[in-house]
Length: 342
Image 1: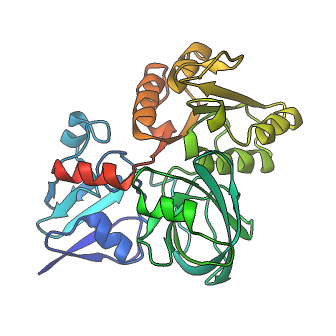
Image 2: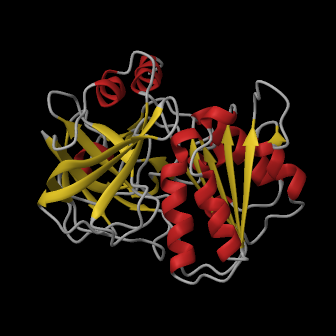
Image 3: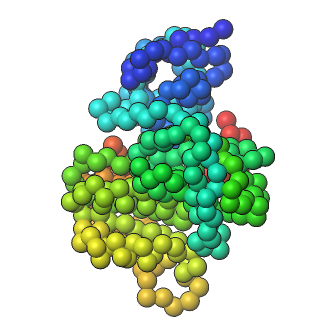
């Protein structure tokens, strides 16, 4: 048995199998549904239930508050319909839709940028061109490995795709990339996905927060904003543990010299020794530098604890929920742990 779900921003209704979430069905049928973690923790797939009945699997209050749920909002990644339904993802006037591409690529270049992060650049052999908006991500499948999601670090229009892949303890795919991946190897790439993309019509200040390999989508957003001539102040904070975790510092320092509206601030949370850099947590640095973020657009990407802590302080500083675009980087182990809680 299946149910029919109408999505206001999509031309044709989708069919949803019993027990399947709306997001799973939508993505399987080629709908560019905004989403992020797929596990009820980021809120990127937040939607309004217009009609019908759905059952919600457990989710984080960070992603959907009780007041929002009472107001008729749901998370598409947690919502299983029990009858035909109609929904609309939030931000109806602020939506992009790129064609979903399934491409065959090959590794053009591999570079160690830190002790545990590799920059992997891919050339598209079949299935391009690949249109996306800065801040989005794709699903990558290396030969013999399961698919994993990684954000594009290059700007749209660049024919070579760039990804920053951090080695995760006991991470099968990240360790394969760190130990075995070679130039010339084939990689399957599918996308684009994600809703934390650059809103280029916005003219207020931009605050971009990157933690670790979360620099990838933030790099794409900041460089695209500069290339597009966006005139507002852009504040880029890059948070890592220690000196050895910093990368592309020279790149952003040079960009800040070239573009007076770019302000680049590295922050170390656990420096091993004396340092002249800012220290502490990323959200603490932001709280020290700003009194009022009402009217600013905020983009943040990195480990879930960093994203949650930053989101909390951003709201206290006046940033509106609709102006905070977050991409939390969950490991597969973290995703499995979340699923156990259901």
